[in-house]
Image (cartoon, rainbow, N blue to C red):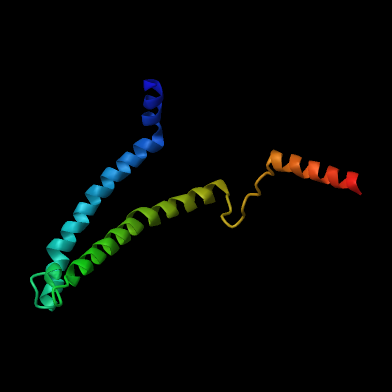
Length: 129
């Protein structure tokens, strides 16, 4: 029982996922501090408030929603430009080096069970005719 657990934990994808979660949390903290320390006060000055989060209308704190949206967009943009774009570039370079054409899709081999069922169906059709 413990051996199975050990094998599960030692798989690369579990470790990679754990690292990604920790890095994501750390990166989120950095972006949150940028939003709260720089952007929120600047936008708040435009609307004569202490910060975005203090902006309200008849008790509705719409500033908090705006702040959360800004944080989300900044995190998404950073992930896209820091992780996705370089990764796509590396994959493209590797494919060019290996001579893989991204526009050509590999034909998947027919499942043997599907082939067998098709053969049985055709055989039964011939018998009834």
